[in-house]
Structures are given as structure tokens and as C-alpha cells.
Amino acid sequence: MIRPTIKYLGTAITSKATVPGTIYTDLRNNGHLSEELLAGYNDVNYRWVSRDNWTYGREFEVDAKLLTKQVVNLVAEGVDTVSAIYINDQLVGRTVNQFV
Image (cartoon, rainbow, N blue to C red; front, side, top):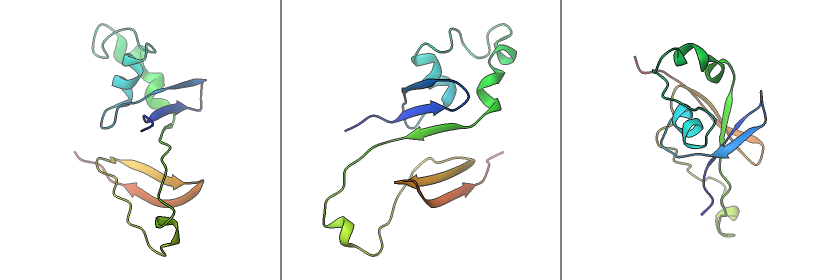
């Protein structure tokens, strides 16, 4: 199984990701953030994280029989807030929600 990855188009960051998880946790676990988010002035220092789009990706293989189907259900548990879901560069779904 190939681990999920994160990618930030604003810089050259590509790292391993943990799903479910958060972008801040993934960046810290991969050494891109050196301290806790809420320590000192890090809420200001780490604002760059929230100012752009992040991409979570995953490569996977499917059985040839699945490719013959006209309809396939994709279950994505834990997708939150705003997302666009692509498979092979084709948009297959969107989410637009927020829990307050």
C-alpha cells in the first residue's frame, strides 16, 4: 500500500501524510514545522500554511474487473470542509461543508 502524500503548490514541499489527520500535524511530523502550533507566536509564524491550497494524494491499483463497471462507488471517509476529488486527473466529486 502506498502512503498518502501532501503537496503544497506554493513551495516545493512534498511529504508523507497520515489520513485521517491534519496538515499541521503532517508538516510537523515531516520536519517542516519545528514547534507546536499554539506555542509562542507560531499562530502567526505558521499562517503561511493556511494561505494556500494543499493537495492530499494517493496512488492505488484496482482490479481489471473493476475497470469494466459503468458505476463504481468511491467512499472517502473524513473528507472535510472544501475539496475537489480527482481520479486520473478527472474530477469525480466535490465537498463544500464546514462544521462549526
